[in-house]
Image 1 (cartoon, one colour):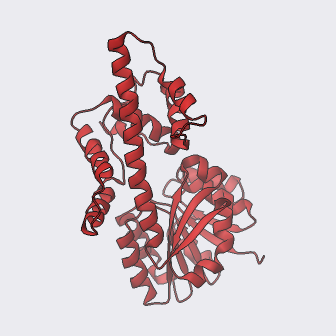
Image 2 (tube, one colour; image 1 turned 45 degrees about the horizontal axis):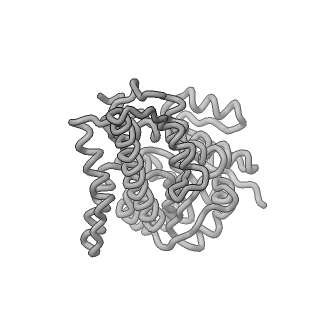
Image 3 (cartoon, rainbow, N blue to C red; image 1 turned 90 degrees about the horizontal axis):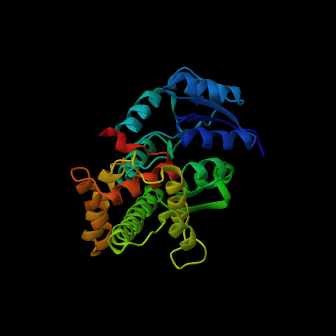
Length: 308
């Protein structure tokens, strides 16, 4: 394999681990984050630190490959704007965030007019996936994706990545992955809350941690999320320090996806109910909300309830 030099912007709880996996695969990696201490930490591990986005872009050899692990939305457009004069035909930007797929299509179209590739990659697996290999859902130019296979192999766990088609398809698949997650976590939280309340009325002592443990050992609903729920109860016990109001960066995107699905003739009853439950919890906190927040903290380090 020919040694590449890669740019990486965004060294948060996901990006730092993904960048390290790429570096450990043998690639030279130039990193930037708005927080200097995060850059310093990566430099100690062997990365090349940059003090600005422009410096990072200027140090990369052609064709340039830059990965973005930053919040979805205007931040990405601002970074693209800062990179504008440093990118040219043949260069590639890879968005590893939870971007709305239509935004990814828009960015790919605009950059494509200059011969610049924009690859959208949905990343699942939380912090553990970032550390040990994630599940990747990829969209964009097929030949360019194939050319960058070495990167996706480095980021994934035992080849857990798949190309789905033209620009936006990776983030479209990841978007509905997140919507399904909303529905499943909501259902699990409601079931556990029901057991919690009914057991008190019936005078039965139930451990929600033990329930999650046994359900995760061969039951029909066995899943990673159940294991994370078990860890959440181990970590927070009675959940007293957790707020019952559920926020999240992807909530508005989920509302858009529900509308798009409805316009395609799909009812999405459970997903719609899950999104409404999270929205309602912001005014009326629930025990289910506490459970959801605790689970999200385990798999993704989320602490959205501290916005209260």
